[in-house]
Image (cartoon, rainbow, N blue to C red; front, top):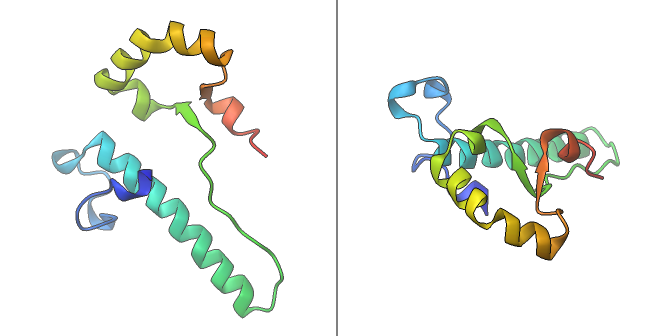
Length: 104
């Protein structure tokens, strides 16, 4: 679902590093959309070349990244509910970047 929360015009290729139009939520959505488009294009090119390989784009779960750490709303909410969530789900809710990189 994150790919749906990008900028209204989609990926802003000409403003990737423009602080005047930056939004952490929109940048997150933009990055998720880019991941999906990349996987789709890779599949298209591989198929065109006759290569029988599947490429997928998946969400590894909630991850503590720089976008997360720079959002007062997200960190505030997480710090508030974390003790309850960790107790209920035995700590498997939010992953570190290192843990996500191991996702199979």
